[in-house]
Length: 384
Image (cartoon, rainbow, N blue to C red; front, side, top):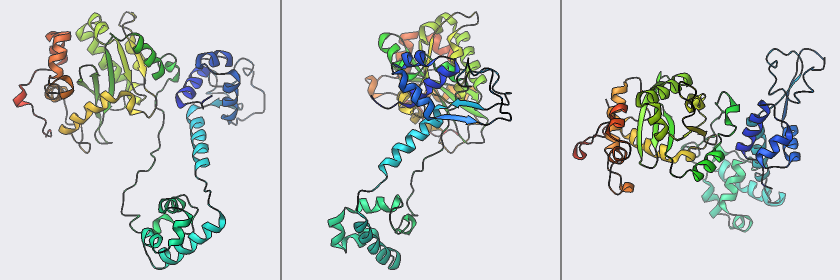
């Protein structure tokens, strides 16, 4: 049986927040009950309280994830957090791969060369490796470099020639931002794949946000029809989930909920803070169901690759280093009108505008503020 994925760990936490028992969780994941039990016990987080008294709710809630009194409870609390569990599992997997199979004697020979020629004579690793044929009998040059990077060698990585010159990618701290994890039940990416495969005729819409500078107050909520490579945007308050869902529902009212029901059938967003209340667009003002919403796997932009690919055209016009606070909704509409009038080779040299106009009509395009631009006049230059 494969190891638990981050998506499964998310679902475990979501189910625990719903106060589901181990059997129900195991059935939902298609896993053995003992697997779920071991996962929770192995990654249990205990927060000490101010009293030794036994919790009166412990018999009902074997964990505190679903307890409504956990915020004010002075007793010891027990939680399961999928982020912490995933981090421990990833670190353990990574640690097991960082050890070296070289013998102590061979490492000593390598270290002798490294100390003498790299630290002492300031030579490059490649020069030291080539000038000592005995090293080639032990391992390759790349293995020695890994020994240094992983801390098994006598010298440090910064002692290598040009090490500090080249840029390296460092793992950025990542955090799960969806506020109410319970909404993931039935809306995970695996659920999306199953639903979309059974409803192939329904339109799939991907959502994302484009940001400029960290200090910006504005962001662009992008909406992409993947079948037509058509994308338009709504100007929203940055990192404000309420404003994002308000703007989407305002769009649905503008085009009419019946029209929205036909166009926005399957909706996919990431787990960013702007989409904390994304599931609320599933119903109209009277509470009637109009669409389905799903979330991508955390930290996986490839789950909505069509949306991300279209963002390249946005960056033609607004570079990543530029603030978005100068934008108005009119300017956003102008930008996406240019983009949607741009010929796509993957659409048999047609434009997204023409395909959507043919499918959903001119009235829809007029209401969302997207207009046709003559092909010769399409302007993808940087905006002021």
